[in-house]
Length: 578
Image (cartoon, rainbow, N blue to C red; front, side, top):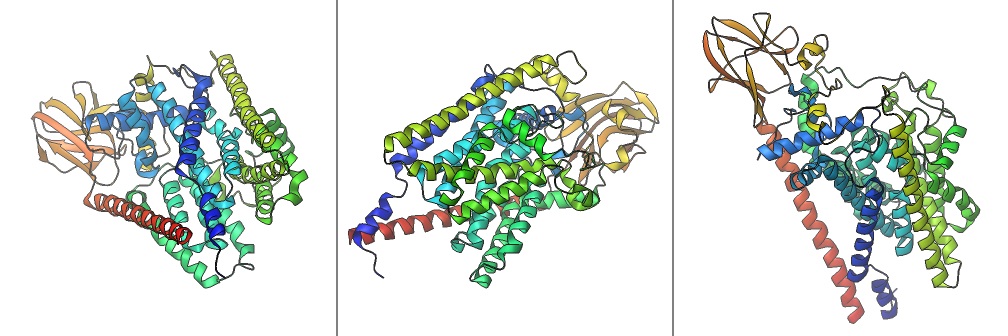
């Protein structure tokens, strides 16, 4: 059937114009700075209980120090984690932390740089949430409301300000893109299969545990969907293309990760009994109404805005379409997964127990409830004849989210102050920043062989023929440590340097053989005389090729998307003006 010119013009005007996009971008930019404003003057972490703050700041500072020395970086940490060549970046994606390091190059205060980084990713969260919801709903107002609900969600704030769990917090940014791509492959426009690949590649380069949990949610959605999918084989083909593209876009992480994982037996992350780390559903609901940002034991929650909007949205259940109703049920299921209402005792000896804490599923409950709430709010606002009244109510909702965020942020700072002087609290400020991060301990990615003697390694102890030596000068060079010393006889020197695959050792500018010491560190046999020993880890040719393939894949994909979108726009405008 031929589409009328009037319909075509309406189709064009319903789309986002450049002027509208600019206004939305500026609005979200302002909201992003409002988000960090309660923590001004940004001279310390909001909450210094637990370890993630020091862990993530150490990772950022390491990237900053390496970029400052540059131009190339190494996977091992030379300036932080007790300066023992800790290989965290082989196993924990670091790409999304590079913007924080770049900001730090411009802003000398590490905490100010950290908060600006949070603002930047909050801005990205708002934008991605908006454009994904606009693709899903074709409604600008609903997309703005969804972005605000999602960006100001209580659990996201807990991740950002209280837990300082940057991996999971940044992963929240990309979930709308991941699930939009998954939706299109199953039910929507399957030609947009690449959205899932882009989202998953970003997620893989951010937080592997969220990737695993996302795959579980996919499975839960996919199994019943098999009975309703049309064009099954074409959609299956789209899914396979998405998987292949995801691999290409993520080779930069997968290749080094698998290379080291297969070589290095690690201590691994702390294992917990998931049944002991879950708490009742009623407690979860109470926490959500209180909306505290404190991350401790059983205080994790959805946040006040989402729980209230979701409950009020139940009265509009029959006013929203089926796809929003389904997100309500998915949100409920994720909420149950986050509590002891789910039979976690059945799964505590299975790979699913790797999630450690069931409350991590609040990430997905937050996402699905935000979708449902935005649909319910839009259904409510659309019932008013007066556009001005709908606008006022929308503004009230946004201001309420900002106000609640300000109150909860203030509460968090007071809670943190109350813990000063206790064993739970650690002091971290600009004056002691370098000392704290250099001495910070983490054993998750420690080679298993080094676990028994890890304390002597962390103390930076060097042994010459089994005896501790204090006559060796250690300096940090770009991508390596250098040890300068003099030996009075042929000796075996054991350096406090952890071993990962692709280690190298040079003495006086020449490569020399090395071996693994009893404590799992680099050990060399040296003749009498002066020595300048450099020890590092190679950024191998295979790693470089993997990064190159991923980079080229991203570039080509971007060109194809731009060309495709430009072609669609031009074709539509030609039809209107014909």
